[in-house]
Amino acid sequence: MFSKLWPEKLPSLWRLALLMGLIVIVNILLILTFVRIAVSQDMRQVDRNRVTDDLIEYSVLYTNGGLNGMKKVFHASQHIDWNGLRLTTAFGKVLHEEIPAEMKAFTWPEQTVKFLLEAGDMDLMEVTSPDQTLRLHVGAIRLWDGNTLWFGRSDAQARRHLANIERHLWFAGLTAALISFLPVVWFLNDVLRPIQSFIISAERMRVPGSSARLRAPSAIPELKALASVVNTGLDQIRALTRELQSTNDFLAHELRTPLARVRGNLEHFHDQTDNVMAREAAARSLEEIDRATQLVQTLLTIRAGDHVALRLHRQVTSLDGLLSSLVELFIPAAEDRRLTLTLGTGLSLTLNVDRELLTQAVSNLLDNALAYTHAGGEIKVSWMGEGTGAIITVEDTGPGLHPEELEVIWDRYVRGSAARPKTSGMGLGLSLVRSIAMAHGGNAGGQNREGGGATFWIYIPGS
Image (cartoon, rainbow, N blue to C red; front, side):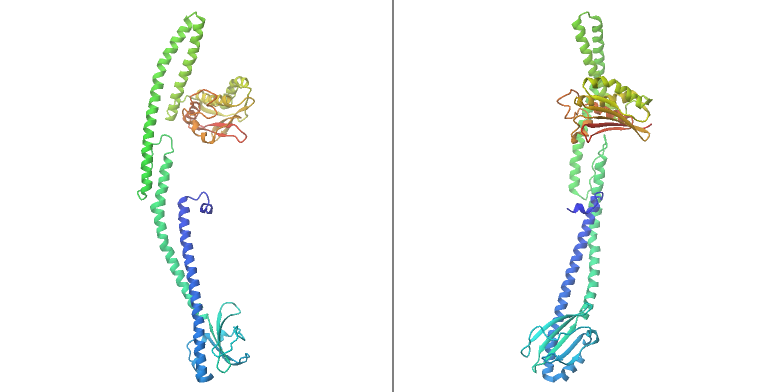
């Protein structure tokens, strides 16, 4: 829920820090608000209690000393500036009043809410000033002679006290906020920043062939334990991968010589025998030997590309001419499968590339497109400039790729799910395409088309 409050590009580091800061500020504001309300309510009740006490006191003074005795005590009061006194008949006629200038703006009530029947009956009311800034607490009591004594107290003094308290509350709140941010700062430095370093070390592991390992902060034992487990697993995987690669390299190198000898013997037998059936068997065997030799060569080429050790015999090559020749070569095979193979139009481009290897890479993409596109489908080869280099694309209307296969199909011995039940192969074609592209300093990739099918591309930078 809270993730929707922040921009998507804002790092989690700052999201959490801002959230913690926001929580601290909101809590302090709530505390200040509740304290202010509570203090205001208490001061209001204090004023009401004072009005009640003073009203009773002045009624006693009136009873014992009459109007003059009451006036004498009222004038001697220290709070005469915000206290008011009024004596009226039961019908509201004013007999005497002592109202300071600050209270002139208030309109005193002419009668009480309650009907005061007996001496000592009392009523309390509140009157607001016309500008709504002050409040007058008014009390009325029935005297022994039937008159009504009114006593009013303005909350001006209480409001001044409240404003002073508010200033102190804000100072305390700001101080508390600064103190509360100390744990946030600690959290940023000792927890979140190490997590960011942990993420950076994990990013370094994404580089193919990288020996980087997770570096966990010592301040977070759980991350340290996780890093240890992951690093141990990575070391085991790396050791097994090296062993498998060494085995593949050894087999590939060792198989080339015996395969060449077997092929030489078969060629000699094919040329010398007069038996037709034997010659046909020898020819079929030669084809299988060629397939095995090509497989070995493909493995060696991929390995060399992985280590950027593939030797390139670069020559200035017309890209549109190379692609045009390839399309013409594959058109008969496309027609046999009732497919339409076309070459897009583009600018005339020349690149300094290994023509043979680039031809092999594009041929592999065309072989895949021919194998997986259904009859009646279309295949299109196109190119476009990209800086000083170029991007070659092969589009088809085949079944496309599952989203989870978009990257793994470029690994060795991995084949797309659409290919498994239909075609034979070792899953080396796309690995070879990417190795050739990377040997040129480029890359290769693929994605599904919106209208169905897939698009594969090779990027070759200028040199």
